[in-house]
Image 1 (spheres, rainbow, N blue to C red):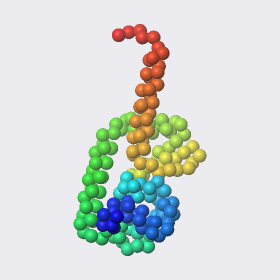
Image 2 (tube, rainbow, N blue to C red; image 1 turned 90 degrees about the horizontal axis):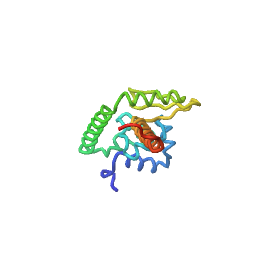
Image 3 (cartoon, rainbow, N blue to C red; image 1 turned 30 degrees about the vertical axis):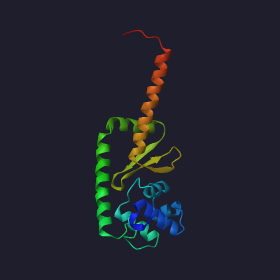
Image 4 (cartoon, rainbow, N blue to C red; image 1 turned 90 degrees about the vertical axis):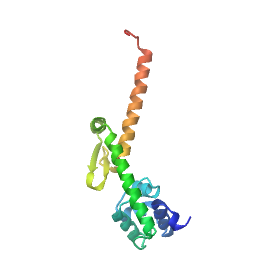
Length: 167
């Protein structure tokens, strides 16, 4: 694959491997989690220009190398980033905030804590032992959906073994 045909993530991975760095080493150099670097490389998350500059510095390459340095590519990057962010905002607006808050409150009763880093665009999950993990909104949505499915499953089990008394 030619450099101008690569996605942002493929380009990051290409330059990282050329520099013989692991994802973990790159994560440490740019002060991000291993999971976030994995998301960058798989194009699940598009890094900001600031983060791209940090990645390029860590990989000892010129700023703009990851983007491909062509104006068409840069314009396409900005257009896709804006579209992606707009769709993420629409999706998160559709989340039932009360249910999400309930999930976070329930996690708190189990000894977990969600710390929102609004300005940085991510969340931190703090475990009972104090260790912390970087997560994103999709993890909370997934937890909410999994909880809903589990509760519906358990309710069907309860109904199957219970005696019907009306309607």
